Length: 149
Image (cartoon, rainbow, N blue to C red; front, side):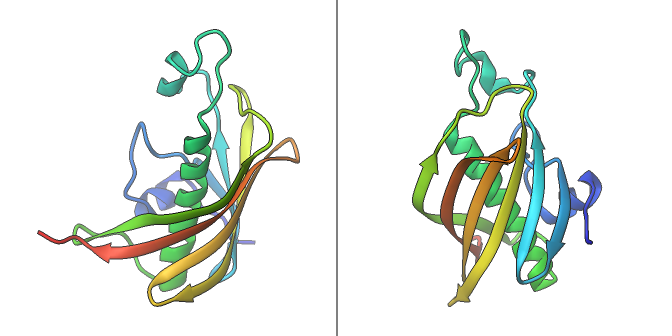
């Protein structure tokens, strides 16, 4: 079983507070899958406005957390790390479904499965669960591209 702590995650994702949405990787296999954890805390900055009466993690941030998990797996698979000359982009979202709200105190378990790599695009199936129940799923298309000046 392969795992990654926050220090190794920081080596494989360029994101930082408040946009780093992966706390821990509990298992992965290069070229295949990755399972990550996002601990959802009431102290997240987005909860101040989404929604003050009943805090809910925005669905777009659940998708972003899944996309960040794909980034870690893509970099581990390619045996590379982010650099200042390129960015790993979310290039497409298909069949996104949101089945249940994610609230403070939840632990989001994110599983991404690599489907294929074609012409520099990485296609993944992604699913997020809370307490074993699916809260969101999507197919994600990502790409690592050079930054043009």
